[in-house]
Image (cartoon, helix red, strand yellow):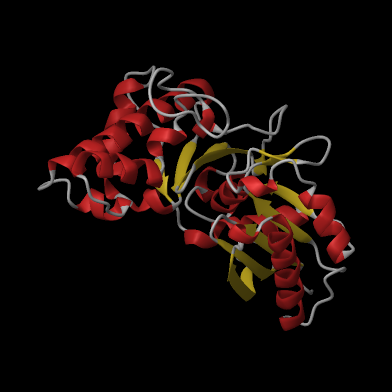
Length: 305
């Protein structure tokens, strides 16, 4: 029997990736084709739209597929309103624009769209680190240039009434601290628990710039690095403890660049455990297994959901 094929696209802030996934409805799908290009965000909306459309055409052609006949899913930052306009995207030139309709018009076909965090969580829940918990509730976390999240319930993304379920990065943890977030609120978790926030905190303290991963490795000998990581872990623990108290998920899986920091899985977990409304923390906090391909694989899974 010929296994179903789907195309997935992950539209990120720095890169756009597309894959052709064979066996997308099985427990062991295979990536047959893969392409990545930089996101032309400095050139604006039309350039991003054309880059995505061209990438879909190219990856389909390489696999000998007709783009109109293969299920296509796209994961992107933010969400889509009922009017079909992008909202809450950190690639801000997309906000308020009918990206889905424009891409469907460009490719002359219908497309499944979802938030990139939802795609990540779906892939890790079905095929990755949290596969053993797919029958329950999996909370997927993105810790990168921003902070995102998503809920997968019994193997399906749970969007919520407003399509924002899991968006823990924009719940307010420090209402009287920090700058105003691009969402319009002050004190959002994202302002304290993303990579740029860690780096900005370190630069403010030390007077020089380092990448977040370098800051983490310098904790033992650099008091400025120790303070920056301490602030990051404090925000992470406060936010995640709130999620656990409200949702009580079966498992939590972390993705994004900061998810590679080892301190999240010991010290970070201990800080979360100290804040949850229970005398112990049984919820596993897991590192991603699918790497930075989770989003694009999840988009392909979305296409046949």
